[in-house]
Figure 1: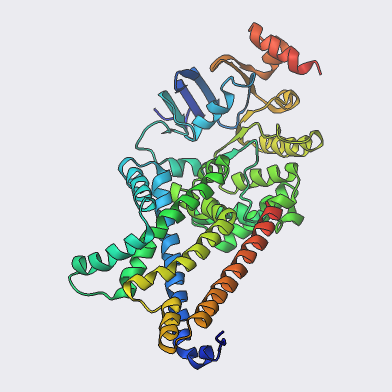
Figure 2 (figure 1 turned 180 degrees about the vertical axis):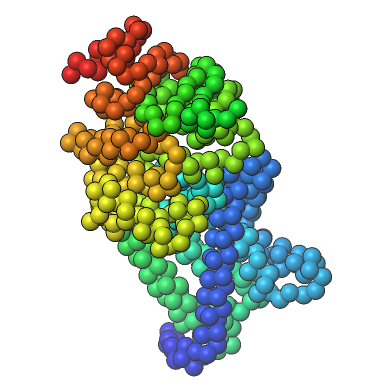
Length: 220
Length: 250
């Protein structure tokens, strides 16, 4: 029976900290980028402008039919080809996450927009606001409020999915922990620690979502 | 032709509209002069709400012409957004913006469409809230107000744009009975101040008191268009008579 030795964690704290920073940076940028691109796609889809809304629908269906890990792989090899020079694992992975997540975010945002009463758009147009002003000032603020819990849930999923970047050798939290685990032969301790950190962060996130959901339900 | 001179505010010429195979407006023609108050009534599904929404282009039409203050709403080259800002509209379900307080609701169109400064818009909102008797509620959210209060805010929101005409789509039918009068009072005051108004309503007391003319619709057609005195004295069509007897009996 071997003994657990968790002193390996503080001993490598700076490496692990770098890793978790990378995980947060990647997840944060991907969430913001994904929501912005997703909103844009949702608006294109809803505006019913012939070619554009079909493009948006095709985009969503395309990315939702592919495994994320494949998209990460592709972008890692394709982006340098398109740009003509190496771009680094981080940029290519970030682009992959934004493109992929935007498909999911756009469907959430579209449902959020559809949940706002039709009369609200009529009222906004009736005072002379343009279609995009109506969306910007009247429809989207209400849609985002209603869908905040679902957006956050998707953000938690994305946070977990960032661990897939190990396939292109980006040093996120999981990869950093694995390096330490292999080097110091502390596999059990390190993977227990990694599991605990992911669990605590994501569970806290879910509790936050539940709390928000309750508050929004009370308001509406 | 100079429409200003002959005092026409709204003109509808042979307006037709279909939803798929169902014809909801059938050869509707109507004139509303400046300062006139028109009540539109008829059984549900008769097309009266659709009719009123075609006037500011919220409902597109299939054929016919609609002219408001000399500008064609049905002409594709008309800037409908600008047109709509000059025609106030009040909805059955109020449709206040729930994420904004009362003052912000009244300010939105003023700042974003008319380009007024924040201070101008704020002052205007204050004056209008006084006019509809809601000064104390300026910073409340719509969900904190009663239906009658919400509808009065909605009227103020429309008036803030200084419209040349106001359209009302069943403004009191979603209200509890004890709140109907506070909304009608505001509308009566507005009518007496000379506002051009077109009102879809079943409130025949209101029609009797302030309407210059009553328009009766059925199956998408305008069946009667008479002065309110004539309409309540002796409606010419059987359908209007039947309708009136049904809603006046109680």
